Amino acid sequence: MTLHTAPPARPGAFMPNEESGEDRPGQPAVNWIRVLKRYRAPSLKRSWFELIVTIVPLIAFWSAAIWATSVSYWLALPLCVPAALFLVRLFLIQHDCSHSAFFKTRTANDIVGRVLGVFTMTPYDAWKQSHLTHHATHGNLKHRGVGDIITLTVDEFNALSFWGRFAYRIYRHPLVLFGFGPMYVFLLHHRLPVGFMTAGWRYWVSTMGANIGLALFVMGGVHLAGATPFLATYLVITALAASIGVWLFYVQHQFEDTVWDTDENWRLHDAALYGSSYYVLPPALQWMTANIGIHHVHHLYSRIPFYRLHKVLRDHPELGQIRRLTLLESLKTTRLKLWCENGRRLVTWKAASKAANAA
Image (tube, rainbow, N blue to C red; front, side, top):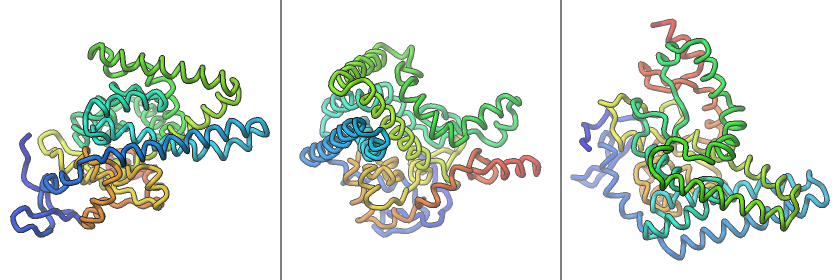
């Protein structure tokens, strides 16, 4: 694709100068590609290690939660929390597989990704295509809607009917975005290749295969543990993991100074670097979430295995100053609802109303 000239420098934006080798503000984000390419090679031993240290604790905590139901369902509840976190980590390994970043060959990535998709309730091929589309179009106002949190501009929202505005307000409410919505997506939406219904048999085979695998898994769990203990813990763990996963995806792009541009001004690499956050989490949570918080680097070069992302920040600390978002700051992003094209930022309902009145 054709790259335009670099945008004006933004606070904390430092990029390598290809000519001098020094870091200076104002260079295009695409200049980082040559640097980040050095981190792309996965380690087979490390990848299998990460897979094992995710699956084994997940099974252990889930088994303990099922056992705890024989004493008290309230006792099982706290055991479901770490199980949900490890399920999120398993999904993030599947996510790396979708980018062909976890193993050296695409075949190995796809096979493991499809197997993991059974347990994460995510049909691998359909989700992979949707997610790759998200990477290829994120920040482009003309190509919203595939693999994204639905985000309208202030003008688009004001142009809606009363019921259209009401529906959007409901959709953007935290109880829907992080509560009912995630469960709908993983329990119902993923049971069909939504968005790819007429795109070919591959997406149907992937989705139906995942459904069959999921049905066999649930029947096996019910047979071994009993219907009520297994289903109760399964639903709690899945609900928690789904909400955590959607929250992580939300804060990766829904922050005040993210980037959205019209088609003619949009630049892929600048949207990746500046339109994605660096979610600064405590070390334990960063490990548990497979470094997905280093999302600006991931979006800029998605072939880097998640276990190498922290090395990028260690070697290039200037990247750690771009689009930083702390845990406390991330909670405030739930107030942001619409993209203001004039102010070039996400705004609250109140700020959007003021902008509309001023216009």
